Image 1 (cartoon, rainbow, N blue to C red):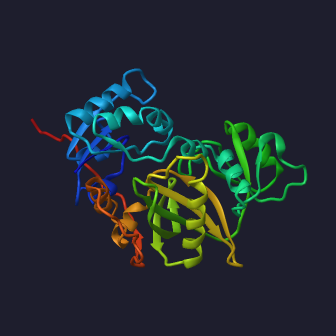
Image 2 (cartoon, rainbow, N blue to C red; image 1 turned 180 degrees about the horizontal axis):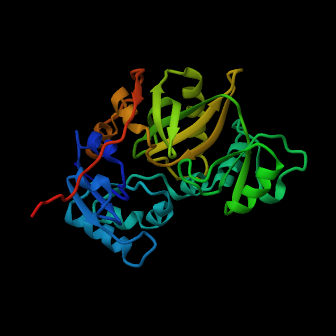
Image 3 (cartoon, rainbow, N blue to C red; image 1 turned 90 degrees about the vertical axis):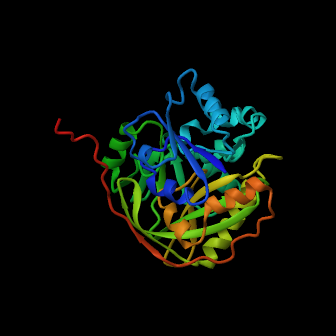
Length: 318
């Protein structure tokens, strides 16, 4: 099958795993993106907010007979949802959860409101105007629509809080939970059914992306994520969870699980989940063929340690 990934950037490991079972076409705004040299075919495109971007993506889907369009850049998700039918009319399925779910996941404050409304345990969270005068430190501050760990800071006192409230545009402030941080890689089929949930303990993060991580068979976290997914499905009647989700949570020393955020996309550490048995490309093929998909009940517990690798261009002596 043929899949199209947008904003491929540095997602080399993800691409290589998907190429084991799919032909991978990629797009990016720059020909200098490292992943350009690993996709089966590359197209340079406009920025998502520029006029003509959607027509470019539609044209590529038609030309390459794309079965699944899998966007990687969160800021284009809502716009792509608006054009879902256009893609489907041309034979391409958008592998992205429906719009009401994206609206909740892409806005950290709406995510918090979703957690509270559905009795999902999470850190106390505040807007800039609602922080209590006696708030306890430390805190975490982040942009309401942030991606990865960009713009996320730990706040230790009032002086730091006042600085970062002005430094970060549209910030939200969260209670700091001491504990072990987990990312759970989730895949949902085209009907909204959960295919697998693979928790990864985050051992080390560098430049906003996990550099050391390990899969763990934590039954409590898996059960809590299952409950969360069922509640996400009820956000709006008829809306579905589709494709990859990345759920972040913290387990404290008492074993209580606090959910932090939900990202409707591939996480940076997802290559480990492929290796552990959560083969997204394999399941994409099953979905595309309309096969019955049995949920993955087991996966390997393994550790991933990542490192940088270079691509060299030019260098002619002529």
